[in-house]
Image (cartoon, rainbow, N blue to C red; front, side):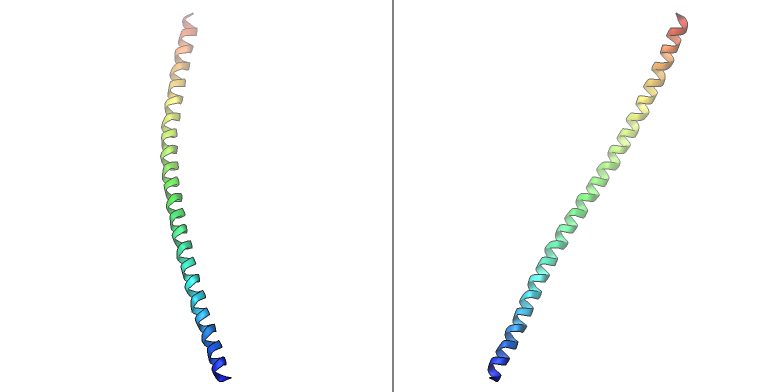
Length: 80
């Protein structure tokens, strides 16, 4: 009887260590995936900043072209 109880306790202990090992492996996988997602988010942020700066420059050029065009149109209208 005592041997059966000891064996059951050993089985429970072994199962606990196995579950802990599986849990640790899952945590490692999740941690790796989170780091990968964090890296992708940082890349997206960098690309967004670069795109916004590019658009800001383009917007400035569009406004400058529009101002020049409007000035030219006003001069043309006045000369007619």
